[in-house]
Image (tube, one colour):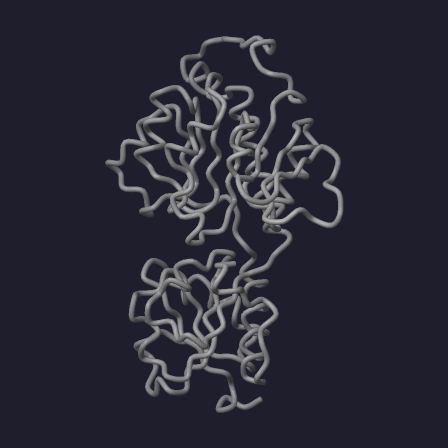
Length: 322
């Protein structure tokens, strides 16, 4: 394929240098696609696809023939909600089973962190103090229910990892699956499923996609349904949580501890009060990353599909948000 025949794309992000991060991964596909920065595009009409993460509100406007906006990860909310996204353009996300395994390992580590109050050991290690905790102070794993909100690739992988450690899982699903749940997993389906999971979960893990229905779902009413002294592991999207309601739930004891990987404003500002709260474990939106090479392969396939007039296999339902 000649250079002139390559499928032309553009990097679009307000928060990441996508070229610096991903151009090495795309070098393997240089005969098929070419990605450039917006300032390098002489003729915007040749651009048919974009690689995106948090695009600016008018990022897509200069490109009249754009047919595809590809996310660098599983999240697509910033793309779907971008006002300049052409209505007819496909939006794709990365689909990566190994990313689910990474997420599962991260979630399982935090389940143990909260279940066994591992911060106790960090505090006493720093003081050079031999301070044991009696295991009878904790619920046995078999009586400590872990709730999972979101049961796609990520949620299923998390459920496998957590049940393997002896914790029962209750998972919220949109519709009751045709097949029975795996051993150790119970489903809550239909209207009110998320709230019923909240009421049952001693440790709650959120990996929901961000949609109009889930925005702000982790709010005061939701937290009131959780068992007193529960723990929250928030791995979904920052916009899922009303921070003031979460802070109030912490102060009331409704939530005893939390792990937060995502925030409404990222990076989390240095002056944010969550940094100084010892009940909160903060990580910088890094629970799970896809392989750059796999992402580039999927973007190349999606761009080739739209060039051939076909729908990409990794396209999302923009109305649903995933």
